[in-house]
Each structure stands twice: as structure tokens, then as C-alpha cells.
Image (cartoon, rainbow, N blue to C red; front, side, top):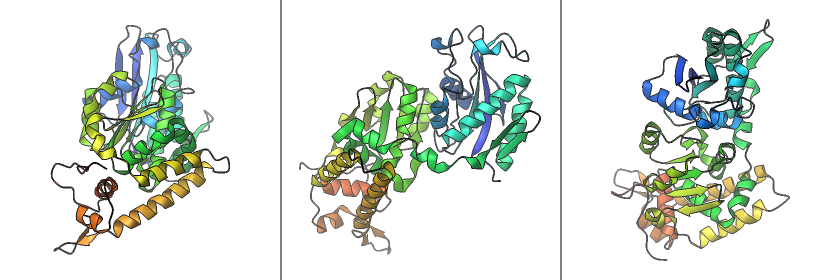
Length: 385
């Protein structure tokens, strides 16, 4: 058995009859900034929770799953996955009758939604039935160290290696995502390829999490689920500060007010409206060429083919990406130090014209094949096509 070394903390969050939401236990201790974020993502303070509305482990799965990869610093957490509503807490005599909601959060650096959902459900059951976090701690430590846990007396177990990471990556349909946006999908592809800041809004959290986890499929060669994908943020200032420090990102949110903070994003994806729009100040990075038109047509046509599976589409897109990167590699020129870099001059020598030249240069920067010039921040200035 292998350990789940990506795990960093287990946290219990509770709401009482006075609507106070507190982190009542954690192992190891989490810092105050992380506590604030975890409480916000648990959504236990929401007025919709009053009355013990049932949003427990069974229907909180995608929320838990996708929220576990909030950033490179591991300040994520499967928040809300193990929540037990107030109407059910009364049946657990070991817990205080003053509690209305309980949520278990896991903080992890790894993206594996279904695995952490299952673990959150188990930890919640252990806590609510025993009335002490010690039972959850024993399970957490066993899973952390060995990747598994079992209690024959309780007829409960967890086996970390029974969850296939390929399922975590392929749960969402790339064909469905392309079909949702049609020709506008090229804007998302460009943004992800050249490492832009993407904001994704949806009023339905479950739809948001199910859809956004499929976006990295467009850049399969990067395997970017564990790096710059933030499937859900509550909009707390600590979260905003973290994503800004990461440089580029794909961030999901349900608060429509975040859309208005255009300084945070280069591209806004609105799942409710099924639309993609470029933020005004970032338009120069999204000027499209004949190459992009050809890519658009291929993506849209392929997504509509009954004989094209999602995996076949991903494979073909990855091959096209590989050829594009090989072309980029061939444009490198060796400098005085002996290092090879792509430059705008080398791109023009290959007779690549505007606006494709700027896309190629931005892509070279994103792939660390070029040195960004001062003030570009990964985006070259463009000319009219």
C-alpha cells in the first residue's frame, strides 16, 4: 500500500443553533488564514443552511472533489463533502444538541475528487457516531501513512489505491465542453495554452465543479490539475491574494460579483450563459489567425462526431499540440551563452505573420522556450492583422 502523502490536514467545522461557524478541531493545526478560507468554502454560514437543509456527503461530492486542489500551496480542502445537516444530527447522541451542521474538510495538494469524497464521508461518519475527533484522527493518520484504513468491528474500510487517477481526469466530457461553447472554445484553448488568467462563473456549484475539472483536458500535455486549477473559491481576500501570487490560473466561483473584478482575469467563462468573453485589456493576446480558425473548425466538428470518443478527441488534440510545440522548438536560436530561445525575430524568419506570430511567441514564453521582454508578462504586443 502507498501513502496518501498529498494530504496535509483534516479539519472539522461546525455550526451551532446561534449560527456561529467555528473550526473546532484540526490535525495538524491550520493557520488562521486557512481557517477563514475553509469556513468560507464550507458555506455553513449561508442563510440557505438554516433549517438543516440537506446538502450532505452524497450530493456534495463534486464540491468536495474539485475543491481539494485550490492551489500549489495546498491550501485546498474537500470542504463540505462530509457535511451532516442539523435534521440528522439529533440522531447522534454523542454530539452536542446545540450543533446544527458539521462539515469535514481535507487539505491536499493532489487532485483526486472521488477519493477524497469517500475519505471525507468516512471521517464524518466516524466523528458523528463516536462524538470525538480521535476516531477520525486514527483513520486520517492510517490513510496518510499507509493509504488505507480498516475497522472490522465497525465494518468500515478505505483503500486509497482502489481509486484510479485516470477517472479523476476523465470524468468530465471534453466533447460536451466544446459543444457548450461552440466556436468560442478557441478562446479558452488559447488562454490555457498561453497561460492566461481564466475566471469561470456558474450559479450552480455542482455544474461549475463538474465542468471546470474538464478544462485541463484542452492542454493534456501539461497535466495541470494539480497546479493552477482552482475549481472553487468563495471570494475571500485570502483566496484572491493566493491566486494573484500564482501568476496564471483557472478559477471557479459562484458569486457573480467576482466577474466584475476584471483586473483578476484575462478571460471570463460564463457557464450560465454558455459564453466566453475576453476582458478588454487582454484583447491583444487573443487576436486569431487562420491557424486558429482551422483549429476551431476541427474542435467543433470533432465534438459533434458520434464516432469520436472523448479519449480519441483528447489523443488527437494532444498530437496536434505536440506538432505545434515541435514547430516552436525548431524556431529556437542559440544565444552567446549557448542557450536556445525562441524570439520574435526567429519567428519572423520562419515567415510567420501577424497575428499568429504573437500567439507563437506567447506560447514559447508559456512553454519556457523564450525569455519574456520587460512589460510583456507573457503577452507580446500585437499588430493589426
